[in-house]
Image (tube, rainbow, N blue to C red; front, side, top):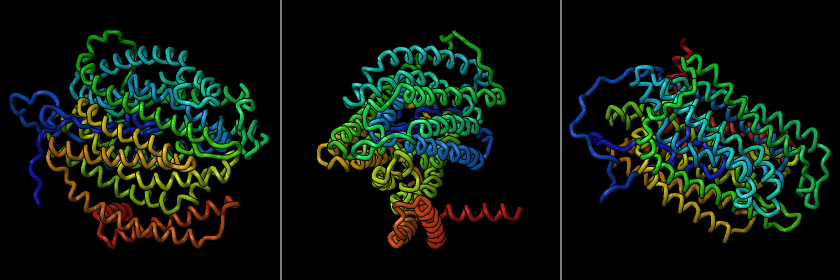
Length: 605
């Protein structure tokens, strides 16, 4: 059935409900947020319609091929996410998932959360599209715009970093349990100054992405990860190896066992990694032809437009950060209410499982949409709506084809994967099994999360932040309500799984709402073809996952063997992928045919 011509619609797309915890993609230029404007008696594009249709213009050159750009970023993101996950594993092995681990994890989120409140949401929904337009339309390629914005961001974020660092004790009391107050506060004094660094990294990466220099923002975080891996390894060798377990077998079970040297090493080392990450963007900026010099002529910035659009973005951001605070508080409360000597999963287990989802999403969906975002913004700027929806639809199909088997791996092989990855040092077998249960639920919610994030980019491409702010409110309300229900009705051991399930429900609601709003604004989205592909890939993943799970049930006990855990995860994971690809061939999945053609062409070369 032919798709009717698209209608004008709103702006760029972001994820509907940002991550509940963890380094958000929103804290960098590849982030996303919910969207969906509601005006008048129904849904309509924000702002008055144009008085007359614009003169058609020929499509602009597309620059680098989207697939090639996606592959470059996919490779960088793969290494970055893998090393980022390696850093999580090393830190977890060094400090465990008990009092010290939960306190460090809680403090780690403070600078990212506050960055989101001060600039993150504004950058994601407004600044990135303005970078693209300035680079496209300004005589100097947008250099003056970027220099002014960087100067303003440095002043605002520097002031915010100073204020929130002084308020560290108040922030700790809002999100931690009494036993954690001291540790979280001390970590925060060292880690909150990183707020300035996160902001500078985001804006500088936006300069590069607007010029289609995607590599450095994806690759330099690897250096940050290596710094923190080194910090974790040193901590393990100096402190963990000779630590004495507490009554329940947990290391560092009391704040009295944590010394100032431990806090300085962990907190200071984490902030040092972010500083080095920012400095490493300098060579890429020079290659892109950008030089930053301080410019204080802020009146030349479209501050009025930014303020107008930022008001709605801040509504979204504030609501989203309330959800982040809620999930941290509930996870900490679950572990804090455990009986003495009993391990109950808390913030660290939740975060580790959540980072598994973000690793998969970041490698696939963020790479695809970051390559498409400049094109979607240009299409929206020129009011070429069919082109915008075509970019969005193709991005969803490609990302889904790659993410479905990952979700199947998380569901079918959650136990061996969690043991293989996390069961090291202070992170014992019980903690690893708890992480596996959370990972199973992550597999269920991965697809709603990624698809909803991808859809929202179509809103943000048009800089419609009013939709974003209003659209996110019911999503956040559902999420926080789910957190409270999980804490009230689930056993303490299952609260973290319930928190992830609550996220999943909110992702699904966001997906459906954003799809409905987007269709009203830009016409049909090609979702019939997308849904058909999802049914086929979903069926292939179910078959592959069932085969892998049957293999795990037949596998010998590997609870005490690291080699056995790694072997089971690798062998069964490869088997699952092979069965998935074979089933996709049988079901004639379109993306599989494209993959075959690409491989054949490469082999012929």
